[in-house]
Length: 555
Image (cartoon, rainbow, N blue to C red):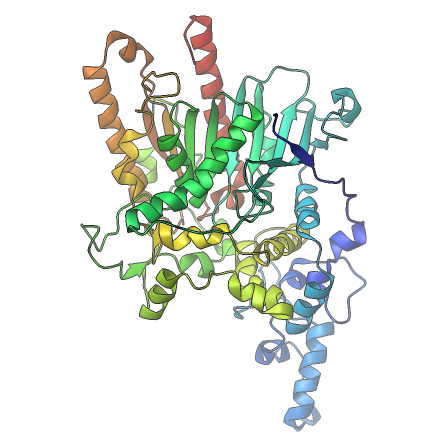
């Protein structure tokens, strides 16, 4: 019986007034002017010292006011005369949760549904036209001028075998040309496909490609089945947790009848992309790992039985400001960074990237992590009206470099993902130790990627792996360099010991690329440079497979 696909009901775009002044960030007395970045993440209502400083109170009468009157005046000032940064500078608040209590309650009460908040983000993508229906004629949707060829997108829920198992899918198809290659994108932990909104249009400019972005099972807007681990052995638990995601990806591939594809994964999505390559060989043409988690070994341990790591860079995910990262002077250089070829490596330019600061891991944090009683999103759910405020602690730093409309849409989207039923998020302690070091580091098994027996009984002869990091990434780029060296040695061995046919088909390679003025979310911090690198990799993959076909060889 063929797989069932259900289409999300079409949603109309939000009215301009809603997009310009979403309920999340609407102050108590909304201004009549257009929504601006400072209103997106205002100082917290309880940070009265910051807001009162913006009130002109030079008169002696104001100085003699009682504390009660001062507090009241400060609140009014925050609503009407919010502080302004000096010209040419951006206002920065020190509050960890910038969203006020009242604004949080307003959003909690009036918030969009998760699919609608995803749609609001996808509506920010330029040029691409939504398909009218799953069976819509290309001519019916290709009416809007697209300078890079007619492209349409669809949003679908792809049903998988089993109870309550389905993947939320976003796809982009180029009209009027054959589909030669497929790119699949996987998001990071607790996130969703909408965060790639700045990448969908630029990378689908490459001819001959079709793009799919997926919400991983139990995350994003995919279904959220109960996450249960039955294994008792710690190593088997890790494998079972990995299989929760990679088995769903393989079932999706079968449902879409895709023979081979290129897989791009960010953070935890990158980790799981490698796990997929190891469990389901013969299905990938290339792996692009954007700031993958779980690559290096725990620096505090040389054996699996040693204690958990005592320090980590994980805290940087919650403390780094993207506004500071994207406007910093890059350590990689101020001139254009050369885009390497598939047979090249960017080690010479990327080894200048500084290491992220490490922080000690408190004992209580390690205990909560291993106990798996709560996840980072549990507090957003149980907080009720305060949930949006808690979410703003992350979104205010992650999206503060973006235009106000985009930052507001992404905040609403992130909050709607965080507050959904917990599922795949509970895999974290089985896959990673406290501090985000992998229970089974990828560097210890990366040499087997592209070297296993495929479904046709033929042994793989390698494929390219691309490691990408931001120059201010808290993820350890050293793990990428270590993997690069391991893969190069594996290629040398294959060429020395393989049969003539295996030597002819050898396609293994590895490179490390660092994107300037970017952190862990490099695809969002510097999308132009990130997209250029990805397009280059896509073109190389397409051209390589074209040459193979022209020679009568399998791809």
